[in-house]
Image (tube, rainbow, N blue to C red):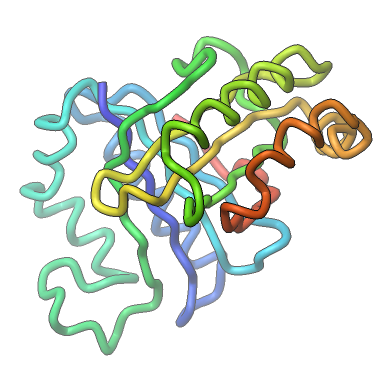
Length: 209
């Protein structure tokens, strides 16, 4: 199994236009061999930012998408895939990752998708990856016991090894925000807060496959 994660900033078109194009692409990808699931998220606290998280049976299945002219044509409506050098007309910018799963609880989509998804982009600057991952597991396991938790995972970029993404699904935003009142959880993450940089996104699901 492999995971693809794209962080997208919409820069040159209305958000609903990008969502329309992504739905076209998402519907097409869902018909392809090796497709497992997709999660399309819109950040509520960073307007214009989206995350597309997809699970595939193998890297080969995912890589094969680049050779499908119909799919490339769909994405060409918002970004220059046919000619990456001709980026003047791009309506979005994409930060693309093929990360490896470091830690996951209930990764496969065998439960309903959460109504609220927290996505953190984490840059580890002053601590070893092993120590950060240890603290994440401790905090993550604690959160997994809280009401409203559905599933979570931590993935590490293979192209930027100091960059992680934490993806946690919750039944509702109230369950997620209740974490702020938990002193024990605060103490766990206090071990690393001054050694990492976090970009936090409270997301809603725009579509999943």
